[in-house]
Image (cartoon, rainbow, N blue to C red; front, side, top):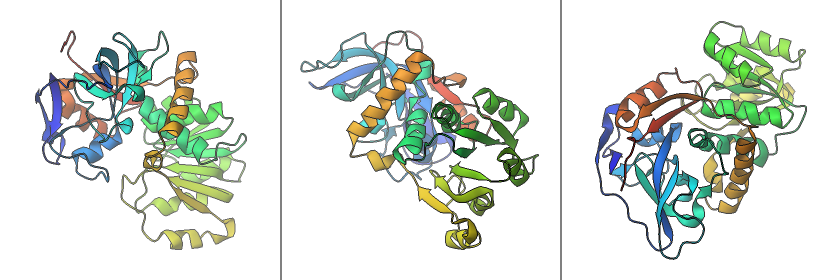
Length: 335
């Protein structure tokens, strides 16, 4: 089969597209033929060698795909050939295996898709898993609260907007272009701010009647992380779920400078649930119902051939992607 491997960390050029053996399912596994493969920040972190849970190299990278069951082991009863499924490497031993025409997984760790599910949309579910747990597993999704989402036009950002609005929160999206402002408003944000053109603090205060926001969800971190605190209402909280610009320096000093508001910071990672598959499964089945009903609507920025994984990673890192970027295997591929 065709697949994308990583032999050593590097830029997009480190991704090697070529032939590898098609995996053979064990007695308890299923072989899935890929329909669409999601691209996300964990893939970039693996490619650049910065992921704390790196798979052993060389490895086929990628953490999610939607597809159809091609074959099953003799002890499998959970799925059958022809079933449409979503496969997540969060259910596997290592984070990888999905940038390929085929992947294998324990059959009882696959998620069967409801009839009629758009398989391209299903390939965006990893973003919604993160967003769901950020909102619900932390207990912050309380109706009536206000929330600011940084990087709101990305895959997780747009998922946060949709799920937060469904939970009764008002959402301000912080983005970096007029096109992204329009996008996050279309996703259901009650307000949108262009960080490159607007006075962010003035716009946040105007949108919240001078209170500030109750919650800020930030995947960026870095040296400007302290800019979050003046945007918070009293007893407000910042959730840091990524560190695209590095770990924030002098975190306690920044909080102390805003002591009067009694701010809080929570760190978040999906790896908190690595040993709790039942919690992941419960959240994912909720998301599958929301997807089937149309309550969540993943936006697909573009679909590129699996052979163009290098170009896809360069595009992903360019900051131009709005919503989800997908890879597609060659039409008609067979084991």
